[in-house]
Length: 449
Image (cartoon, rainbow, N blue to C red; front, side):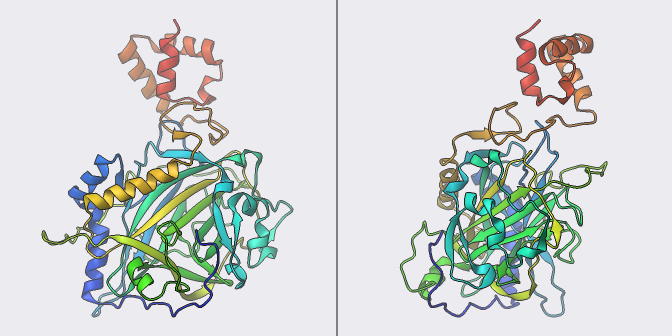
């Protein structure tokens, strides 16, 4: 990420006009999730193409739900056009599959954030570790954080849980797209958030709690809480501009732009919070099932060629006061790890992706995982021993065990009673609250009579 602020800021580019071309760019980009060719290119690289991703700090083993789970979307509100009202569209993301959720354990000191934007001060660099240790230094209104616990740092934070993804934005030639990352946390309720988010871009770092109530689009199907850039206490949506045009217009200060400068990178960081009331809902199903259903795609013409390039992320005009802690008494929940989602933004006008584009995306994503001490799945690999494993029961409730008994008897011939006897001997009488999954149980039971 860049090490200093803009010294001679140029005028912000204008949002794309409500033209037929821009609406088609939005439709074609959103429709990428239904494009079999693009999905095939992603799959060949071990990746998936989605428009809703699971960014969880605590998921049960071998399950799609858990005690602290979040859905993330990237939402663009289409402008009204010739009397037709605007609507919200979810943009495509390429990442490793949601269910297995491949992650890495990375030192938070390896992540650099730019701070100062919250008070219109010159930007300076701090590590994520330093930020977590004293977050009130980086708030517009630190007094809105009530209570005595004002650090987000926990002993377990020698490592944070990290995943990476590429995000596509509909950026027409000569313009830019306006968008918001949107987060829905299944445990958060108004007045009792389960996570705090830190949104870091090349223009600064912005902190807010997730209550699933504030700042949603009016569109019912595109749910969640929008995240904004904090521009001196005012909230602004994010913008995406083609890097080639950003450079042609002089960039931030006329200096050469390096591919590694972080112009197209965003960090979406979730910090788990203690809740005053236990999660009360009996209905707990991940909203994704792989992604939000997309509308019928407006497919690119057969002769269309890829115009994918890096998108430079900025921010737009002020839209009202920025909400940070919202006068709540919050405290870090150290049972769960901090999660960092690294996003690389791409501009496209037609939704066409080439093999070269996908290879670049794969390399960028893998470059993030290369920084990890350990890489793998906390969901499908049983008890991993990783520092980023959450503390608590890791078995999905309800009928998970019943289904396991049936599968286990069919596979091994062991009756339910015999399997229970083995598990009690191996794991104790509280085996149902132990951190296990089917793979782990299978391996344990194979080794004992």
